[in-house]
Length: 75
Image (cartoon, rainbow, N blue to C red; front, side):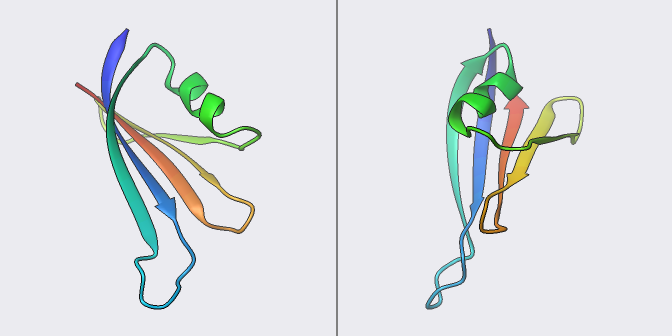
């Protein structure tokens, strides 16, 4: 399995001065990053973008129009 640093960026509605996005960082192992995201985000229409040779971003819009992205960087 490949190892990745995963940064999950979740959009949040603006509310009372709070940040409009929230991020979390994890280290994961997977052989299929699309299957990994699909297992966490059911019925999401995913978009895949290759940022560079080591980094892939999988993103989608949530029902409320806010974007969530999973940024995988191979370690």
